[in-house]
Image 1: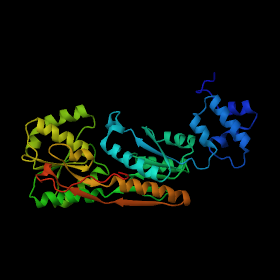
Image 2: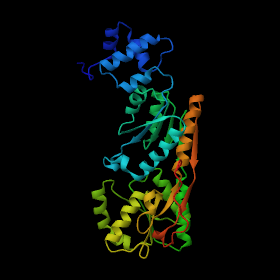
Image 3: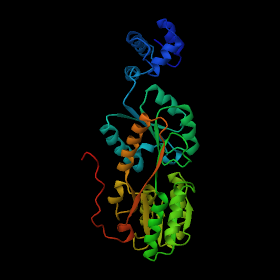
Image 4: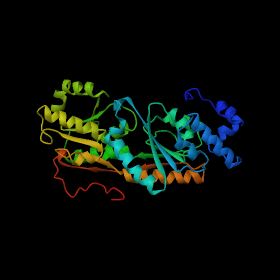
Length: 346
């Protein structure tokens, strides 16, 4: 029985009497100059020795695996539950449909280290990648290491490389919220975020622009237990506010429940607004006002741009996706004809 942790390419090559270059080329799908018989022997030996899974071996000889990998940053703020995050769930749901409709298979991986992507993408001979939640310098570093086309969600960097970057118009989302609150004569407005970086800071700057003045800014802990303790310490500040704009629906719903649980009335005492417009916004009581992003549109563009990058390796694009503020009961508005975005295929 082979120990897969110690199996090397040279071990596989020695067993078959072929060069390490031949084994490496089969592993990476470079099989045009290798006979079908040799490819099959290498695949079978790789599986036998436990070097790679059966599915990977089946795909290795194909120039097009028809696999699109979706890699999500398992950031500490998710506390080990990144795939449970409502925004991540909605993004994956939309991507599932678009990737399937384009004739691809979707593979999902969560990782704290973007360096894992290089091995992950190569092992499965992927046709493309969609990356969510990493830092700007990490995307640039990854571009130097792999040639696979990849699309980024919310990458904040000067895109002078062959990367497709789909960002939201975060500033305008905040501006729409600020303009609405200004029109409703809400003077004491607070923005809540766990950082003062992009994209959250753009949402705050937009809020101030729409208000026509500076709003308050409260930086909250990432860890939920510490965050709730923080809210308890600052209850007096919340009682003095007219409205709170949270940079995510998750924080907005959590805060709204906390305030109601501590004797405040939403919207009578304070208005609460989120960002993303996840499905839960329409299910909580009161329904949550939020800035809606079109997850289906972004997923459709992501898959389309992977195709363009496969046709032209030098293709690059940065596109800003528009957003729309949706006022609901958490801002004292009766829910009107506010239908959830239609899920493609339903």
